[in-house]
Each structure stands twice: as structure tokens, then as C-alpha cells.
Amino acid sequence: MKREGKRLGHYRMEDQIAWFNRKAGSHGFTVEHVLVAPERAIEGKKGPAAMKFSSALFEGVIRVTDPVKFREAIETGIGSAKGFGFGLLSVAPAKV
Image 1 (cartoon, helix red, strand yellow):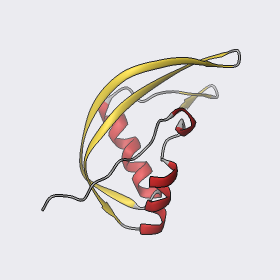
Image 2 (cartoon, rainbow, N blue to C red):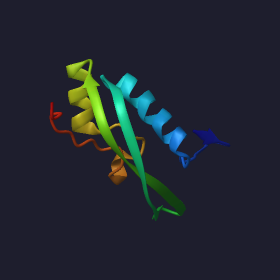
Image 3 (cartoon, rainbow, N blue to C red):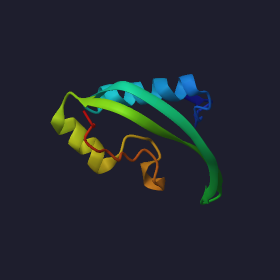
Image 4 (tube, helix red, strand yellow):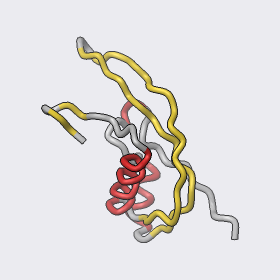
């Protein structure tokens, strides 16, 4: 989400889940169910600009729909702040 050209965080759980679902659609998976645990905000600087990142931990079950896109998502991440360590995916096989 952007306002006046600045990227804004998603602070409400509904917005975070909507973001994750949008990312899923373009990265080769669908969300079966997910829980969100908000984490702390991280502040830093890039040159003269102050930056603040909010993080959230998503836990749940996904279904891979496009293995090629999904592999790329695992390798490169899905968030806009990947260069700062955000948007990384960690997956494990579902216990059936």
C-alpha cells in the first residue's frame, strides 16, 4: 500500500492476510489457512532517509499450484523489503 509515493505497512491482521493472499497468487501457491503473529518494528537508515519496517510471522498451510514460480519465491522471497531480510519463506511438508 502506498500513500503520497511512500510505501506503508499493513498493521491490521486482515490487511496482512490480504497481502499474503495476493503474494500467494503471483508466486505459485494458494493459502489453505494462515495465522498471523505481529512482530516488532525495525528502524534503520538508508542514506539520509529514515526507514521503519513492520514484520509479521505467517504460519499455516499452503498448496503449491505452480512449482516453478514457487521455487523462485523460495529462492528470492516475496516481499518488497527482501533486501532487508523481509518476505523470506520457510516451508516444511504438511503433516497428514
